Image 1 (cartoon, helix red, strand yellow):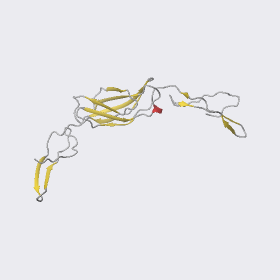
Image 2 (cartoon, rainbow, N blue to C red):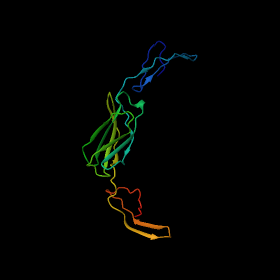
Image 3 (cartoon, one colour):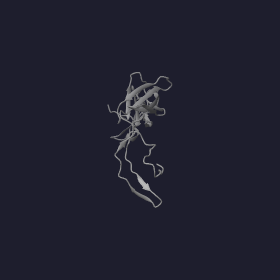
Length: 194
């Protein structure tokens, strides 16, 4: 706070954070210098307010078939602004006009999984994550694109060939499966001996 006139015996401190405990000291000063600070005041907690900071690092993906996995960085306690804090997750298929809304009533939450058999594998969704507390709903994050879970590959590799290299080794080759919307990303292959 600014320096206060010597005849004034109270002041208003502004720009404090909601729902945070503070203690205060007063220091007297004159033309000679600054004196010792007073003893600290009792702890005082500011009133709660609607949260204004949205979660960050909205992402997700992965999961099983028919799942949309959404993740975020949790909001720290000092920015929750009150009791009853939780998250609001809104999402819609890319190109849709209707949002689906879910409430995650946990301070520690950093993930939400939506399950629905009608979700096509690797479908893009627009996702926003917001916050709320007992005072009301706060800010939503900007839109992030998150893809639904993949399905297992539906086709087998083609062109499998075997070449004897030695008495104890055989080299196996095949044509890789091309990426497409239905097979997803092939992370590896498994060679089985029959």
